[in-house]
Amino acid sequence: MDLSKVRLVVSDMDGTLLNSEGKVSDRFFQLYEELKKYNIHFAAASGRQYHSITDKLNKIANEITIIAENGGIAKQHDKELLVTHLPKEKIDYLVGLLRDLEGVYVVLCGKNKSYIETREVEFIDLFNEYYAAYEIVEDLTKVDSKDILKIAVFHYESSEAHIYPAVKHLEDEMQVKVSGQNWLDLSHPDANKGVALRFLQNQLGVTKEETMVFGDYNNDLEMMQEAYFSYAMDNAHPNIKQAARFRTTSNNEDGVVQILEQLIASRNQKL
Image (cartoon, rainbow, N blue to C red):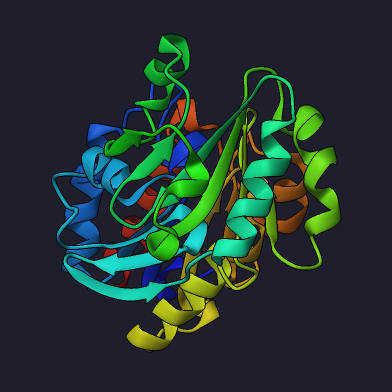
């Protein structure tokens, strides 16, 4: 396995680059400086809001590519590379459908901020970890739909058990992704991390064989297909472990950092 070919590294955030406390390892930022020396581009690809990703990666946010909202938007600093909106009629239909589910919280994810209807303190405290810019509104169907990229849906126990069965029938017409233990995402059929990664590869002139990706959940599946060096975290969903070519340790054991150290070592050996 020749890691020295790698020119692009793409990592998911939650369950992957972030540990269970939602923090990025200091060692990662040190390794990022080494990646730069070898002209290896780094991209963060997440279901998170753009502003939430920049908060976590504030030290390097202006230098990297950020793929947010599961590929709904991709940016390099202030430059938008790709934006895919969710149509108004889909938003209204989905909000109506999801409101009828017990124990479910609905988030409209806009380009600049997100919107929720609930004022429940417990949920908002949790929600703040993922959404840095948001507004509480009386009715989600009255929100200006022009900038909505995705609908995120939360359940305290399991999104796969309590939300997915109610929206599974929509998979032929849109992206339906169980993106974490508690979250499920609904977006335009063309909005996923794989589409955004292909766009970035074309922009950089990078091939699949020169791309390394890390992921842990079902919203990373399409991204896994766009890289030869595809790594599943040890804590990953079984679908990701099956789709990935390689495996690394868990997010709490700095699995991404361990592989990046191997990548840098392979480049040093070439000198």
